[in-house]
Image (cartoon, rainbow, N blue to C red; front, side, top):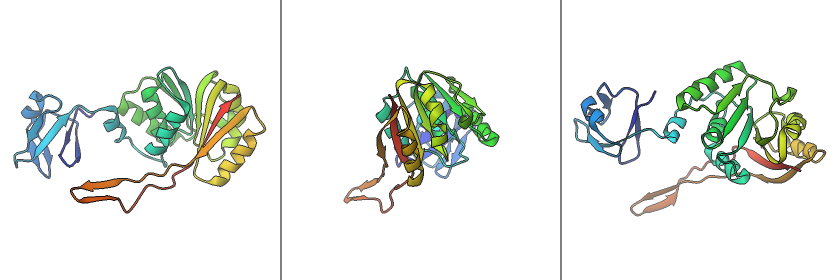
Length: 243
C-alpha cells in the first residue's frame, strides 16, 4: 500500500510504501523522521538539498499505478464517456470487457455501483489486484461471458470494450432501464459499422460517434508550442440510448 508521495518542482513523482524507512532517490534521500512529522503540502529537503513536496496519495495517484495487461481505455476517452452519459454518484453501471480495469475503476470512483464482466481468468486476476490497490468497495468483478447474457437489470449505463459488441447488443437492450445509455468502444471502424447496423434493428438509438485526439503543449519561458507527438487514434466511441 502506498502511504505517501513525493513530488519535485518539475512534477516527478516518487511513491513511498513505508515511511518507517529513509527514502532514497537520485536527488538524495529523505529521512523517515522528517516524513513522519510532516503534513501534506510540506516541503522536505534531501540530504543533497533538493526540495520535494510530500502529499497523501489521491485516487488518481493510485490509479496511475494500476497493473496493466491488455490495452486500456485511455483517460481522454474515459472523460468523454463520463460527460456524454452524465454518470454520477447515483449511477449503476456495467462494464463489459474489463481488461485491466482502467475504465471500470474510474467509473467506480464516481458512481454508486459498477459491475465488470471479464471472460479471461488472467485478466480477472489483474482486476482483483488493481481493485485492492485502489481500495474500491463498490465494484463487483465477474469472470463471465457477456455474449451469454447479463444478469443485472435496470442499469443506467453499459459500456462495451469487446471484439464483437453487436453480439451483446440484445442482452444490453434487456438490461438497460428506459433512457439508459449504451457506450461501445472499438479500435476499428469496421466494428463500429457492424455495431451501428445491428443497433438500428433494436430499440437502441445511436446518438453519435466520436474519436478524441489529444495534443499537449510545452510552456517554458519563451518556448510556447505543442509537443511534436500527440495521442491520436485510440478508439471510436459510439454513444447510444435505450428508447
